[in-house]
Length: 383
View 1 (cartoon, helix red, strand yellow):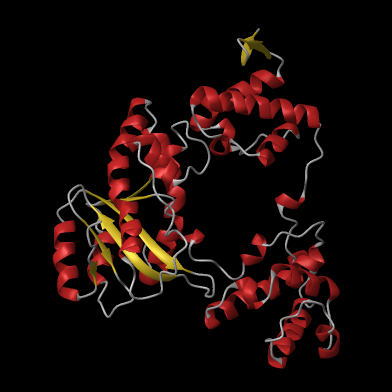
View 2 (cartoon, helix red, strand yellow):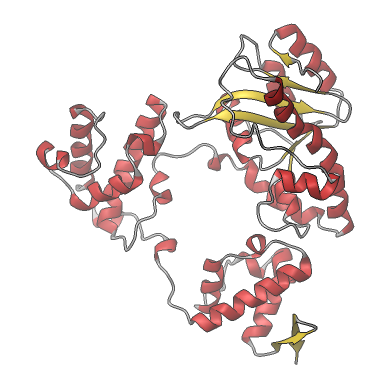
């Protein structure tokens, strides 16, 4: 195994980035740690072209500006695999989303490879190579890094740059380039990286919620989000979601009551607890017409199970015939909405999803198609 050099000085980085600027496509990946912090700690950046590649160490005393300039250079296509977390890191550090971008995991969902295909499976599929995962869960903060760790990190981009033209060719041959590009728009939305503390409560799942409870939960979740950002600690390391829900339901009104709640972290100071009590009190002054509405996920639609199973069968059939991942076409909530008669604004009835699945849903609901089995496979009969 050849020794892999890691870039730790400004001159070498500038020289490398000057080579990158001349490229039309670059594969990019990162290694990071986020177990004990709110913001991920960027430990390595890997970049590869067709002919060269490098591992960059942002933890050394190095100016990363040349890398940030490459990420914002619109003449260079940046290829990621499952790039959401990588993009989030770059957005947190620079305030910008890299552009233009291409995500091979999203593209793979249009190639008959299923939902959220792993990188090693993608490499095996297109290059016939097996990737060792031995260094996958390394402590990327430690220095010095071993040659084996650097080899693993670099392989992520060295193979990715080779996979990209192959998967792009497959997408082109199936005339799905426009479909894929539309799915990339999700990664370009700043809202998924720049979390609004006022909206973070919507990510907390609560069974049988009441609007009064949600109102308190919303205020507590907003305070927790701002505190976690300020202290740079993970949300559930500070106060778990489940505990926020319990506090919202119990509505303690004094320090003795709140200290009796089971599971309260010991490191919370009295000042923290008094702040929680203050937030509960303030939230109770909010008028009922301003309380949050019950989230859609909580409104489990009571639909006929057999009918839902039939729609799932149709979805599975359409997925197999088209080579598109089921998750990409529709989810269970959308199927329930269809059976509940809520067809307006559903993605399955517009664009390519309608062509692949939506139009067959209408035919099924109108009794114009049925299922049969031929050669041990499910087939559709149209009347």
